[in-house]
Length: 347
Image (cartoon, rainbow, N blue to C red):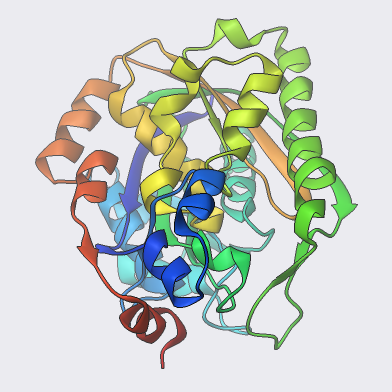
């Protein structure tokens, strides 16, 4: 069986309140905040990119494990904001980690589900016996055009999951994928900011694919929503995951621990993985977690995790190192819109 050995997270300390963004564009801030159910979002530092934030999460992930860097046989970095069009993020992160040379490295790109696609590839390599340990990272310094609706939620964070064939903090019970050609969101090569198809991103895109992967996974495992202690869904805003959870039959109590979006925003490839990390930070041994990501273009990856008796020790390590999601959320330094532009648009 494939096990989750360790996880590491990174949320930049900088934040901007949605009220400030709305004020610049003379919009009704209360209407935007209540509609999106997001109050503020994380902002990368002026010297941060997908490589640096990926390394922060990956180094924390390894530090909290009993696995040496040289034991990692594969490293995948999923992102929409790889700093190079030609030159992999994964090998730079691998070099910083000191993995060595005997490992498979690759960058993944599938909008917001690139990180979870990496989880499936690593799981397959472990299950086949080809590697003992592999790491999947979701990292983004999310881009959005000024005065675009995406500007209110596009955020920055990274999550690294170390999977292995030895007993870990959770077992990967099952996974599935649901894909189609539904171009609700895109960015052509050489274009700085992404475009999106407005309301088309809802029903035929996010909901169709998250619902599709969810029902497929429930059928595949002969389970129902009430069989799970927690659920995690991709969070483009605070409303979509609540709506899809309700449609599927999950309760608010199952969903709420995963909702990082209200104070972090949508860090694209890291979104669902950050929600999973928030759940792992508070879950008890023997808990079952239902998780579904989403990526525009479009597709969803679904996973079922079951925590083990080793999880509390990991939680203590993360707390001692100030790495719990709640701790990182609390380390906020607020910036105004001009400073936000300097950090995100490098002007």
